[in-house]
Amino acid sequence: MVLDTADLAVLSTEPTGKQPVTNAWTRDRRYAVVTNGQDTFAQIFDARTFKEVKRLTIGQGGSNIGFSKDGKTAFIAVRGANDVAVIDIEKLALASRIKAGTEPQGLIVR
Image 1: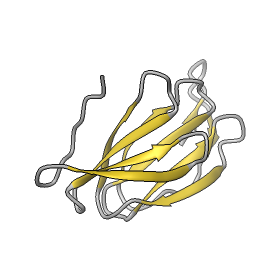
Image 2: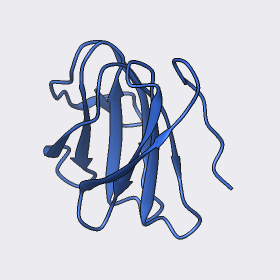
Image 3: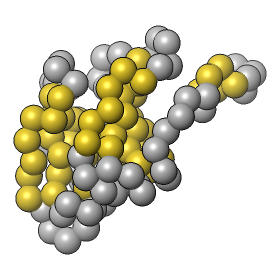
């Protein structure tokens, strides 16, 4: 759901996966990234149109999201895969994976 903060009017509602957990804006505020705790994909929405522009399979249980300092890379903790999905924001593509501990949920990106 997208709300207008001035009057709390609903601007848009868009379908998500099961149990949307976390959302985060890219540094340039062009996209919003949404993880779904009980699904196998993350979604990327266009900030101007509120429409989904990309769905990336990352594994079951996407959780918290962090970004690199330059904003070109997103990192998503994936509980079911016991890893972190590395997303190339310019290409809107899964770039790689980083092995993590059991069921990671939080992450800090420096």
